[in-house]
Length: 148
Image (cartoon, rainbow, N blue to C red):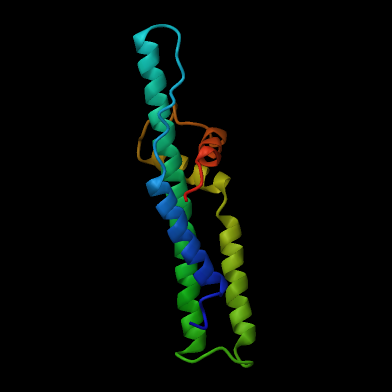
């Protein structure tokens, strides 16, 4: 209970909230009308589905990386505390552990995730020419209504 409000546990709880949000938010079914007939309309619908899936994958990767950082923080903190409680003798180490978590979380940016996923897809030989842009992914994320 002493650790409930610490940075790592707060980050882990936020990961759980963010994960539930991505799972619970509905697919965007508002597909723009495309001119050019049924083939162009089908293409517009597929692009919308691709954006939805790609953005969810992007957000899931962000959650996964944040969770991994928080879990690493928990492990380091347990090593420092060795089953005990925080005290003046280990405060410096705990602050260092917290700083390491903050640094790791700051490195988990949309740009870094987008580039990582794109590079991974290219290495696996996946088609990436029609993947949505990072801006489109960010717009998708911002357009999701908050959960109640």
